[in-house]
Image 1 (tube, one colour):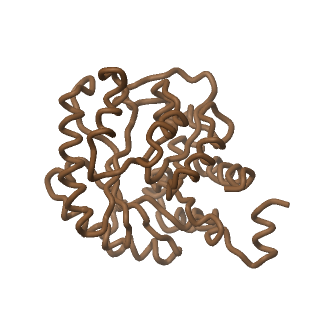
Image 2 (cartoon, rainbow, N blue to C red):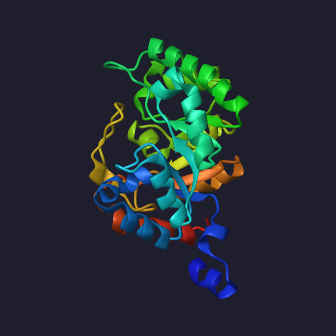
Length: 272
């Protein structure tokens, strides 16, 4: 019996059982821009409750946008932030997270020119530690989301090793696609740093796709969870063992509206 059917027979909703699963709202950015209310209604139909969101308001005021989320029963558990916001005005990230009721704030990109260097890594660590300390005083955990450019060599490891080993006031969000895209092993990274990752982005990569370490990839290589080469099942299992709190589905492909429901079914099939 499928999990969804079993839950309905027991009077239990998907959101109650899979409370740690969510969606990075960036997945439906194009649909939100065209018709935010109907897009959010559709996402709600998928059984999604937890969101990572708040960066793009799609033309709405902050209060209007939150009202739309509330109308559909969504909970923003991770508020989108930026390197610049944390560097220049970390209290803005605090206020935003508090407004949404989120306990996490996430940076997705560290600005750099050309190749990401050791100096870029040192600057990233400085911003994460200073900003993260301020956010922590207000009950918010700052996360950094690597995108693959951090895997250039450093000593016996990579620049990401440098960042992780020297960051003391922030945690990390692993996007398993971008780790794999950089020709790295997400499971090995998780095992290497079992207590560093607060959340994950779950997205899969078509078998045979070319690798890159610049944080760029053909969006059409993003496939339904379980159909690619990332190894989603083992990563989810190990992530749970290590206490990863939130697993956000993210799908940047043009097939997102068809693929996300199938990805949810896949997660159900592995007893998420």
